[in-house]
Length: 482
Ligand code: NAD
Figure 1: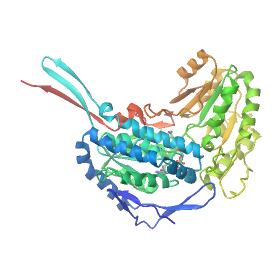
Figure 2: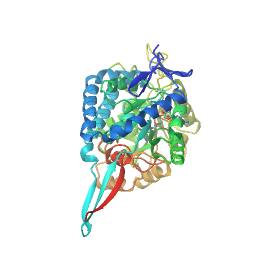
Figure 3: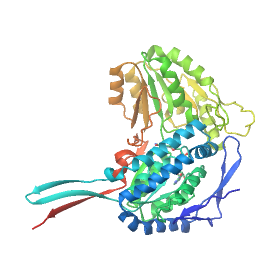
Figure 4: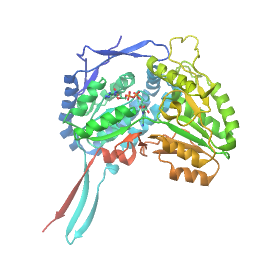
């Protein structure tokens, strides 16, 4: 059984930690690897390596720094399929979903190669006679990322390409539930001949996170976690004087207006609610049909959900894989029980699904609740599983009221053929990512990843121009020559 190694200062190092966790294939329960919970000395060694690499790396011209990213893009393309298969086997999403994840990862690497223009400052001559003023952007030092389980390949690379292209050095701590694909990506990083210490990987969990948060030599942290962990990281990073951006949990509402074109609406709704087994921070969770669309929508949505093929994510014909772990499966089943206790009605019950040949897998079938009320736990809390709740509303105002009463603000969509309803929704809804006839509002790499309220802590978001601002500091220079 492989015990994963750390990648520190340009070399693979065995962890000396006595503690490790098992990484399991959620479709079979097979143990795929052991992941060490690295020691303080090992985290410190990664921080030291990144600190030592920084002075030389920041002086390396951006045009040279991006050559490494061009090479990385080529290697990722060469290993695309193998990496997608690794994602499916450790995380449980289908191969197509894993390919989508890989594509977005590569897109971030591509966008970061634009850093020579993206990082330019600005200037003005003659702010007073013969005096000029300019702003230059400079890198800051060592940054680190704390990713979640649900996009094990992509999330660290929402940040790392911009950080290193801008001249910083970097530490990735993969999610301890899905560390294998990041290990494989770092095998490609190892082929780049980057100066040692520019990119480092340290396996572990809370202990490693705490060390990174407390170290005076780490200047900034990007995290993508559940909301309680995001609050903790945000507070602690601020206490230790760091830059910090924390993407957090979600509860996403989707409004369907009476004028929506249901033939075109149902397929994106199904992908939104049940794609990645509902384990996306952008997954639909509560469906809000307005007025008379309720009956036909409920029927067609439930029928389409019931037809999804659930099974081994490595089977190309499968449309929905398992959830991440036994513990998470129990948590999701707990929410289904709670929905029933609170009086909601099950239209489609995914609890007793059996996948032949995969009896040990953590499968839950698509589940649809009707007669849900906004105060029920299934309508309020993040479930992160294939469970949809339907709340019938009278009009768009009532829908927006329900969305705003929820503490999260990650994403929300409307399906309509009315420009004015769409405009009102886009204008009023307090969420960071808005979809109009789009079910999964995943911003391209050159746009920031939105998120408000309890779904985001910080001010600069991941990706887009925000990434450049996060990973650089502006310096003002005022010049006079006699
Ligand atoms: P999690 O909060 O359990 O863990 C995420 C990371 O935080 C892991 O790397 C873990 O090691 C670390 N961590 C866990 N507990 C910690 C603690 N007490 N102290 C310090 N670090 C700790 O989340 P998860 O279950 O892996 O991922 C799912 C969550 O991530 C969901 O809530 C989902 O909405 C969220 N998410 C958000 C976005 C977004 O962009 N807003 C994207 C993807 C996932």
